[in-house]
Image (cartoon, rainbow, N blue to C red; front, side, top):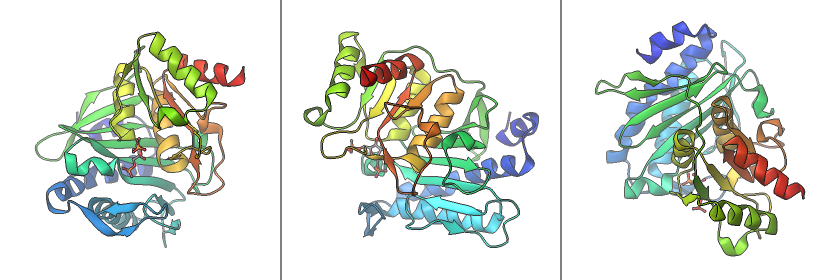
Length: 296
Ligand code: AFP
């Protein structure tokens, strides 16, 4: 079944369905850049990181499509210094986007992706207020995984650029994969204890450098991704709004959980779009373990 037809069966708001389609419809254009827009751009983003040409291209494609559609009032992009307000928007939605997560892997042809969070209004709200979230993964296959709070559903792009249903009502299984970000020498004591416990239980390491791809793997195989607070970066590295909450929403709706090590990440109210956070995302069992170790 096509994404468009599937969305009709879900009884969700028409504007929300159109918005999900809009993101899916940009995937072919973004993918075309993998051949034509490789390498670094000569600019840096708000975090001081070198932007890849494809980061900028994906950002421009998505912002242009959103502005044209007038489907959202607010756009917060990891590649933009400020929240963009859309003139004449037809509804009050806000979106957060990481146009191309894992962009340091473009040059080596590993999976990267687009991460989107959808809010009923302004985006500086806790993740648990989100209307939905989705990500598009550009791997050997291009897939789109979304939730609007009615299950997590996955689609695959066919040869014509149409997303076709691949798996309905995804549920994260029990698993034994761990994807640990940061350097071991910088681990804080509670995090070291957590990782050592996973290792003693035989968890296998899988970490690519692309959060969206690593979490996708955890969603399908179970286990945990973590990019913790660490010595020198006690606020963590990953972005709350662009990475943590949207992927957290997807994994939570699939029966998993997301935490900053202390509380559910979806309960955290951002102070600024640039907020960073420690993150633990994956199975409920593993999230309960880190929270209990950190409390003790
Ligand atoms: P980019 O989109 O700038 O490549 O950032 C990737 C990322 O935010 C996340 O996708 C990875 O899990 C993490 O950084 C990898 O960080 P390290 O390079 O420090 O392992």
